[in-house]
Length: 140
Image (cartoon, rainbow, N blue to C red; front, side):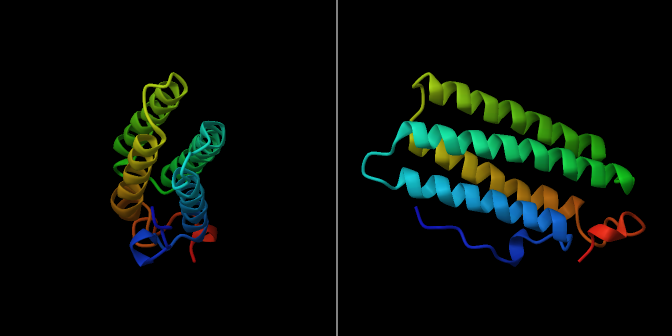
């Protein structure tokens, strides 16, 4: 799979969130590199997956704090999307560890969801326009 390059579709205009999204893109690219090997090392894939999960949980908590501080009107719905994705990632990890899914399926599922979420839910919820009056230290 080709490396994913950061582009304006992923930008929210909030520096900290964009930096965190860039880091998530980096993890996905790292996963892509491993998966593209002729015989992907499942242990390396599992390690990158753990990093993605850990960092995603950190990112979700940060994002939710920002949205709470700015009284985002769809906060509960956004939190629910995060909760469902967290469950999905944990299920992917469980299935991968149990040998129920191959590295390519794991990579495709994770990549697709992450980028759909960043491009749609996050760019709508977290933008300089939607957080007007909120935490100005987070704005670019």
